[in-house]
Length: 469
Ligand code: FAD
Image 1 (cartoon, rainbow, N blue to C red):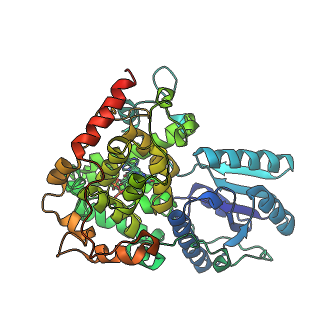
Image 2 (image 1 turned 90 degrees about the horizontal axis):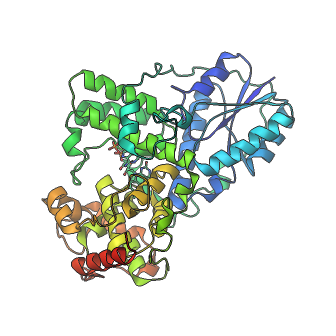
């Protein structure tokens, strides 16, 4: 009988445990993607980008003589329908580790197993599954460095070769049309503008990794913090949708390290930050929507989305150049440099005394590399409420950061049309992308700061002291 293979964050053919296992059975395999209850809740940009990834992957499957069946609805209902339509005896998938996906998958596995279906999951999009990494006393890690030390040299099996063919069923079930789903419906920010910056699919992701290893990994340690140049891999976009596996990235990193490219060590470390995020999301699911440290629950953070300061932050017009440049980078490209993410998050939660969940929700909506675990951890790290977080009293000064990480103003000029006559195309694109209701024009005077940097800093520190720890 056929195997239904439920595709999720694993849109690739190579190094794919579940799909390889399905191919090896010699049984017919029916790949399916479901616009399910978890996907429906994604923000605008990730949902749009996922749609493009799925569409691309459907083409890849076609090239190997298979298909991707598209269905919409609650995952369990859809899978049950497909089982009865196709006579499939098995439903297989790659595991996910964030709370929403885990809850969905548990329900599906239990119900299908009760129906007598072989419901099996395979290792998913991490290097080390969260329950395979333990502290010396047997618990999970709440601090990054010991986890890094634990897994740094842990061996992983070789990458699996690409699946070359999948046995087709006698009869394919019907499929929805991707265009009817309109996964870009919420992308009011001009999808064609953001589209200039995306890199979709497995082949492109592999090329990205190869270029990064050839050109950037050796100098990654210092270059990763230079905001104006692309010193990082940009692979977060592809890792998010499983267009490349973390193991392929890790193996490439190790090979580079053996070739004497010392920056590769830091790259390997960053991959483990991603692991740490999933480790935490799995073991402490509250990290995605509650203060990880409960003592932060009574901190006087604001969260009124209508507040002028919050709007200014989202719209990239706080009057703080580096903050505004980074916010516009995200709006217009769907990506923000890691240092930018740390700076705008510190600024929002400290200078603007705004709840990290406001920032998390905006990132959820804007990032094409949106990842439920890394985004939540990044916000709680920045706000001080998370595990192994930066202390709240460490307030990034965006001006000092700009001097250090954008010394020639190249990054700021790329995104701020009002201020720099030599601004980049992205700065102009920004004004084409934003909604008219924002009422912004490149001819405006650059805004005055919504709060003075030292005043905002002091306000945050006073609130922190009043909290009494
Ligand atoms: P590289 O520097 O090339 O790093 C390689 C890979 O390591 C990345 O692709 C990523 O998978 C992983 N990585 C690197 N830094 C981190 C980190 N700090 N935490 C977790 N994994 C990391 N990353 C996301 O993928 N999705 C998010 O939604 C996301 N939200 C964030 C929100 C905030 C507030 C902060 C501070 C960070 C967030 N990050 C997120 C982490 C980080 O900024 C991005 O992973 C990184 O900028 C991606 O660029 P890159 O692929 O060029 O990274």
